[in-house]
Figure 1 (cartoon, rainbow, N blue to C red):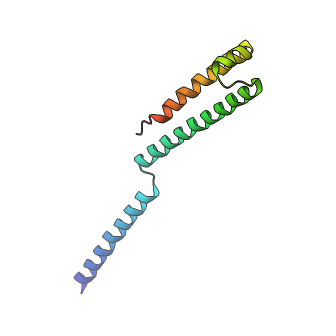
Figure 2 (figure 1 turned 90 degrees about the vertical axis):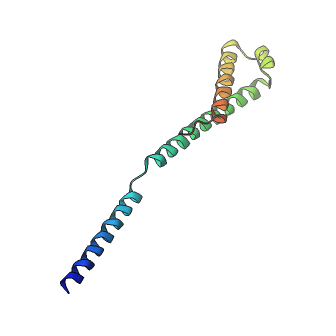
Figure 3 (figure 1 turned 180 degrees about the vertical axis):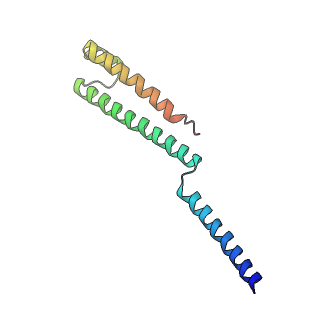
Length: 104
């Protein structure tokens, strides 16, 4: 009878330890999950910056009534055009960066 109780106790102990191990594994984030979340966050930040730049570009184009960089060069003041050109370059760079994701 004592052997039977010992066997039952060992089985319950091993089962409890297995349950605790699986519970802890689910509780703590895995490295791959953290990397994926970090990658998605970086992509979202780039998308938000690109969206904001596009909005500013559209505002400038609407203000100066031009929709082509050559047109804008003739209509915009020098500093405004330099800022516009920088925003266009930055937006194109961000679009390239979004098109070629380097997932971890």
